[in-house]
Image 1 (cartoon, protein in one colour):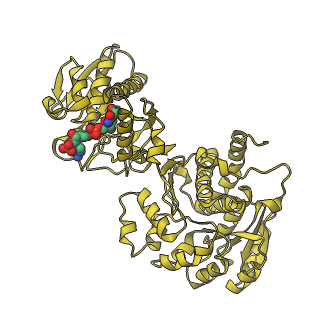
Image 2 (cartoon, protein in one colour):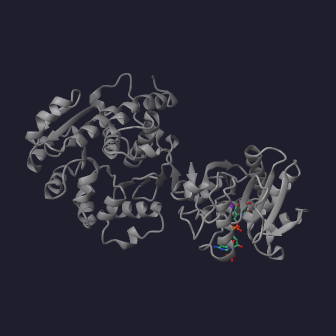
Image 3 (tube, rainbow, N blue to C red):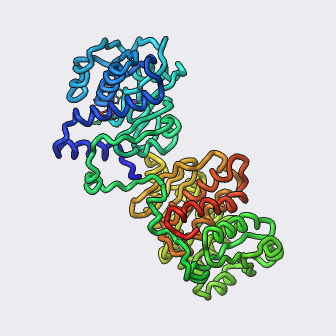
Length: 496
Ligand SMILES: NC(=O)C1=CN([C@@H]2O[C@H](COP(=O)(O)OP(=O)(O)OC[C@H]3O[C@@H](n4cnc5c(N)ncnc54)[C@H](OP(=O)(O)O)[C@@H]3O)[C@@H](O)[C@H]2O)[C@@H](O)CC1
Ligand SMILES: [K+]
C-alpha cells in the first residue's frame, strides 16, 4: 500500500542493484510482467506494436517484444530516437532483440491489435513536445487498446499531471509499488486497470526510503479501528455533538449525526438553535437534541467533559456565529467542515491558533473550501500536486486535512498522506460530505487517532457508496455502512 514517487522508486532500484541484483535482471523481470499482462489482454497470434522510448522504459519494451514474439505473437517494434543512443540496460535489451526496429515517427497503426506503450516512465522530465507528443496523440487517436509500461507516457508519476499530452491506456503494469500518479487524477483516468508486479526489489528498501504516501486501504488504519467489545458499553465509545444551523438548514446536521452514530459513536447529540429543535426532534430517534442558541450556550453544554467530540460546519452558516462556536469547543476532538472552514477564509492562522489545543482535529474541505481557507498562501495553493497541496495545508493548519474529490487526499501535519481510489462517481451528490464528516467524527469519538480516523472514514464512505450503487442519495450512505462494517469486522476478526 506504500506509494513511491519516481525518485523513491529510482532509489529502490539502485538499492537493489547495489545489493547484487543486476539492473538487467530487474529489466528482464519487468519486461516479463508486461508480456504476461499483454498475453492476458490479447490472445496468442495477435498483432502487437511495441513503442519504445529512449530510456529504460523503452528497455522494458524491448524485453516484452522479445518474449511476446517468442510465444507466438506477431510483434512489430518502433523506437523513438536513435538506436545507437540507447544506454546501459536498455542498450543491452535492444541487443537481445533480433527483429526489425522501425522509426516510431512514421509507424503505421494499421493491422494492430494491441499497442504496448514503453515510451516514457519514471524518467519523464519535462512536457512532451515535437515528435514524442505527436506520437502520443496519434496513439490516442487510433483508438487501439494500449498497455502502458510503468506509467502511461506523459503522466507524471509523482503528481498524476499530464505533461503536454499523455497516453490513454486500458491497462498499466507498474513495478514493486504504485506511484502517486497512478491514483491522483488525471493520471488514474489515463492508466486503466493497474497491475503491480514484483520484479525482485528487496522490500527492506522501504526501511531506507521510509515512504510517506500510501493508498487508503484498511491495512493503513485497521490497527487503530475501534471494534466494539463484548464487555463494552456505549459510554466507552464516546459522546459526539453535531452543531446544527438554524431551522431552515437542519438536514446536513442530521446526516452528520446519523453517520456518526452508525460509525460507532456511543452517543450523539444535536446542538441546535431553539427554533430548530422541534424539526430535529421530529426526525431523530436514537439521537438526542439540545437547544444551543449561541456560543455561550455551547460552552455551557460542553461543561460536561464527557462530550469529547464535535462536528461543526455542515449547515452551521458562514460568519462570526460559526467562529464563536468554534472557540467554545476548540479543546475537544474536532471535525471541521463546510461553513466553518469558509468562515475562516484567508485566515488559516487564526483557525490554526484556535485548534492548537485540540487533541485530534480533522478538516474536510473540498477544493473550493481549501482554496478559500488558504487564500493568500500561494506556496500551498500552487504546490505541484493535490498530494503536496494537502500536505502543505495540513502542516500550516496543524490538523489532518481531507482534501475531497474523486482522488481524496488525507494528509497529516507530520507529512504522512493517503490517497483514496475507491469512490465511485455517484458519490458526488448533495450531502455526501456531511455524511463523511459524521463518519470521521464517529471514529474520533471512539478514540481513533486523527490521521487514521480520517483515512478510515474516507475509505468507509467510498465503500458505502459502492455498496449503495448508482442512484445513491446521501441518506443511503448511512444505511449502506452496515454491510461495509460487517465485512470490515469479519476481516478484523470481530464478532459479526
Ligand atoms: N532503473 C532500473 O533498473 C529499472 C527501471 N525500469 C524501467 O525504467 C524506467 C525508468 O527509466 P529511465 O529512468 O531511463 O526513464 P524513462 O522513463 O525511460 O525516460 C528517460 C528518457 O526519456 C527522455 N525524456 C524524458 N522526458 C522527455 C520528454 N518530455 N520528451 C522527450 N524525451 C524525454 C530522457 O531524455 P533526457 O531527459 O535525458 O534528454 C531519457 O532518454 C521505469 O519507468 C521502468 O519502466 C524497470 O526496467 C525496472 C528496472
Ligand atoms: K510508458
